[in-house]
Length: 191
Image 1 (tube, rainbow, N blue to C red):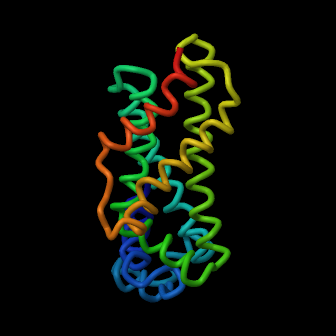
Image 2: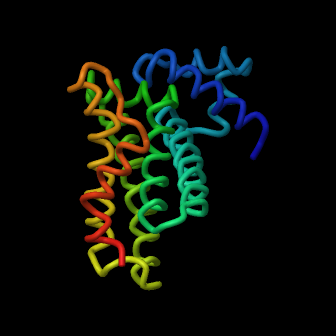
């Protein structure tokens, strides 16, 4: 990737993280990057395209996290758990994704809603593909992989994000989430 384009993307990530999508201007991005605004427009048509490309790069990073977790997992359930949990921790700890999630809740702007929805869609599709392979390999029971990936993803989101809100900021550990969901799903999904 072109070094200037990468610099602009990194600068935009910083600005979006600090000021949100709505509060960021192309002038701010240019100033942070130390380039003229026209330079940004040689790579990106507008702020929305810039955010879209950044989100695609974050999705690629999340997939790498999930791939690593799947490769290191011992049992099929551990692979599923580690991949979903790893992606959600990445999402929870990444400043830009925190800011985008906040902006979705606060303003509900179509651009940020679409950005967060594309992340969720990609993660579910990724997990679904791995589940299809596990079904084909005989390590997972026959099920609707897309629906199963969706259900598991939503359960993990609830446990990783929503549980803390309900329980006075007491997060669940990785081990507790895995053992709880393993209790419910291991016998239903894994052969």
